[in-house]
Length: 465
Length: 99
Image 1 (tube, rainbow over the protein chains, first blue to last red):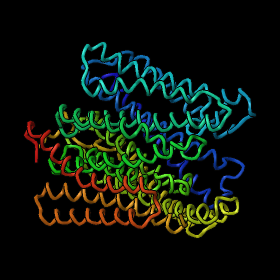
Image 2 (image 1 turned 180 degrees about the vertical axis):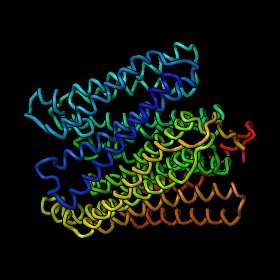
Image 3 (image 1 turned 180 degrees about the horizontal axis):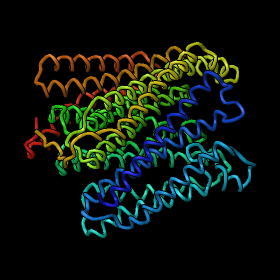
Image 4 (image 1 turned 90 degrees about the vertical axis):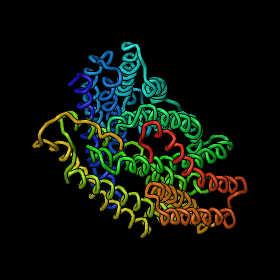
């Protein structure tokens, strides 16, 4: 196996481990809503929540990087440029993640000084990591960009997928730099912070996962390059057309001018349209291949990505995206349900699909099958759907009683938190969270044990019928 | 907007996209299986969508520009599955893998 693929396996393994940490921290966060004294004096709710959302970002990022390092040598026929730097930085990245997690758990906060920003945490949601760690992530991103672009230059050739990915490296690196400034005006700070959270995560990541899935479809289904590249260009056009100004739906209530209400609402309303095309495409692919490939779990996770993205991003998003409705739903558990579903569908399922693709080749399996992955698939997706359904109920109760009836006062907030519908949602979310955690354990077991007893052979992608 | 109308409007918007997804899924399945029954089911799903969109336009307190956007979206949802299917068939034709 090439050095790049060995590195990819390390990244994917680290991603799956962090997926477990994210699940555990999420489960702990769910317990606080039922029992606020949980781990009192040791790990407060905000620390569990930070661990939950930060590991979510990092495991997906590591999953993307693993996927790209996996496909890179196949695309260019050579080892990536600067692979030695990527190999070193992988361990630096892992060490930094562990150090930051330890700081969050054992130090938690410091005085409002520069020292705290540099050593402990920056206090900005999703990018709480202290500056030294943020510099590390920026360095990892720079080397990642060098690996992709430099390999194309080294190989003196470029494919459509890699051209899109190479161009995407520019915003991927530049937008992350917004993680650094300390802006005292909260409205201005949030204005730019959303560039990082929306444009980095929801635009550059969308294109990155689009490239990864294009490569995965060629590998998994033997789909021709011409077709996947054609669809990738369509996706890029749609992301640029609807996703960039869709940023406006985050600008509704943070002190920005009123015109963002119209811009954000309009472009957000367009966002489900391409997702509908994706549903049709998924049905078409499933039909062409009669639901059969040599790698069933990878194929099913790909389908789960298409439908999860549609339901989480499209259906759950559209309920709360128009400004008149977002006024009440903004920042409630309703938003949380949309966020969970959309991230799961858009990114997590894609990364899990690539894990199985890499596993098949690494262990030289003719086919990937069995019942383990089915259990993992059912428990994870069932748990996730149950969680987002529960959060939806809780969020609707919150928006209705706390916001629409109570007028967002402190009293209304407390009444909303004590409302039986809200509490039902919280208990139910915890129950489905346990189901999701069982799914994670099954997945981890399945990924580690799959094919260990099978006869090894070189896998071939199933040709389209 | 009253609290109840807020919840109803939001649910109608979510249902509209859900019905669009059901229409796309059933339309794709109908073309793939060449099933008239599934095509009728797809039509039924779209009828639900259209009814839902009409409800949003006629009965919710959204302002006219947003209602216009909803109506235009409902029309666009009708066209997307057949157009996408045709584009997919065209793209796959040269590969010999089209349905």
